[in-house]
Amino acid sequence: MSKYENLATDIIKNVGGEKNINQLTHCVTRLRFNLYDESIANDEKLKNLDGVVTVLHTAGQYQIVIGNHVGDVFAEIIKIANIKTDSTTIHKSQSDNRSLKDKFLDLITGILVPSVTMLCACGMIKGVNTLLSFLGVYSTGDGLYSLLNAIGDSIYYFFPIVIGYNMAKKLNMNLYLGLIIGASLCYPAINGVDLSIFGLHVNATYTGTILPVILIIGLAKPIETFFNKIIPSVVKSFLTPMLTLMIVVPIGFVVIGPIANTIATFMTEIIISIYEFSPIVTGLVLGGTWMVLVIMGFHIVISTVFVLNVIAGVADPILPMFSFVSFTQTGVALAVWLKTKDIQLKGISFSGVISGIFGITEPIIYGIMIPKKLFVSSLVACGITGALTAMFNILCYTMGGAGIFMFPAFIDPMDPSKSLFKSILVAILAFVVGLAITLFVYKEKKGEALGQKADEKTLDGKKEIILSPLRGVVKELSEISDDAFSQGVLGKGVMIQPTDGNVFSPCNGTIKTLFPTKHAIGIISDSGCEILIHVGINTVHLNGKYFEAHVKQGDRVNVGELLMTFDKEKIEEEGYCLDTPVIITNTNDYIDIIEFEINEEISTDDTLLVALI
Image (tube, rainbow, N blue to C red):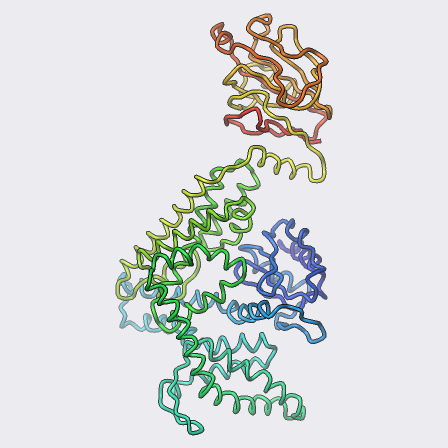
């Protein structure tokens, strides 16, 4: 059985079964479904699956956030459900009630997301090539340098071909039609030269562009559909693409392309003008809102504008404002890992740190920031990071990977060492900002970690929370110098080193036992949990001296009610140790007794023990 077979099977079942899946793709962290009917998918069951971070309804898709292993889970789902990965459109037999916004976001995502990894790979090749030549491994005149540079540049130069393929696939067209339209726009003999077509003079360059090929294929779709309907089947396979190409490529090259290039240039100039007005404010705003854009699904659309700059060979100052946010989020995850006492959250935060180093931050967003109410403080930290990239004038020279693999993207071919050093410095500062702010603002609620741990153990069972009867420092019961307690003979529990002389009721219940010497008191809770509080070691020999009871045996008590007081200083002057065991004497009646706040200071309104029923 495959490692992810059970998870894949559960996902298929809870999205409504194989027959409810129209399309399935994935990005770096998410499974992206187009479902025929989202209402029959079970969000809650999916969210509770081990291996699923969260479920999102965004960008016109039903998205399941998986994390680093999304590719493996995707492959397993494809195998089990026998889904055709080329099935990328809403079947006409099904109604598509999505809003125009959702349809638009779904289209843009389908066009751009499939090529993101190759953009990053080629960008990293360019960056590494620049670095190796700077270090003297080979010169810029070396054949290997030229070859690696060609590999790195290839996807950018021929990007209309890549986008043409993705667009045709998304629109359920002939894939080769999309490829040929993109290739036509890249043909060297007609790029950047004066042409006269239909009496119109045009000089345009479409290599490294995105918008022209998208609009041209958008025109090609209805034309292809029209020809498919009227042309006889025997010649349709070649006549339809021939006629479609002869119509749309000239119109696209002469009319649609120049308009698209003008629109793209205008959009870029608006953003750059805002940046030039105040780089730091721009970084603060863009960095601080990036996570919101990711959650809403708009990040792909927004970043496209700046990717155009990089593809065109222009050093871009905007992309770094988004890129370094991943280091800030990694710092947030580390801070939570350092502060939390919840074993489950420690696991989530530690895996978040590891994935964050490699630029995968959605597990941090959905597993830590949102559930733990750290979203606003994280936005502030990310805004500061964006401002830092502007202060240090970090520029993006090519597309790169994520996390630590993004540094080659910031290497200036004219000054590799300085640009690399600045980008590493900003990454460290971004990490520190996220770490410091979270360490300051994150406060784990007392009992929160324990409640989660108890819930994990009991599943659908019950638990009883026992509060601390004293203020002090909690220690393992095994550390006490009395063997009857330390070996657990009398029951499981903890030992408290008290900081004052007050003992309060840890639960609602009845005083079962009050020793004549007043140094120990037994309580039975309303649900039958028997708790023994034994103040000090061998304090029985004091015969009640320095102790005062405020209740008597058989009294009904409420949680937090004062049970007894003792003179801490006087007892210690007599040479007695005040280490106080608090134990559950009917331990065998419970599945487990969970200890809380070991080696930490505790107050009387904090959870001390949880008895699992």
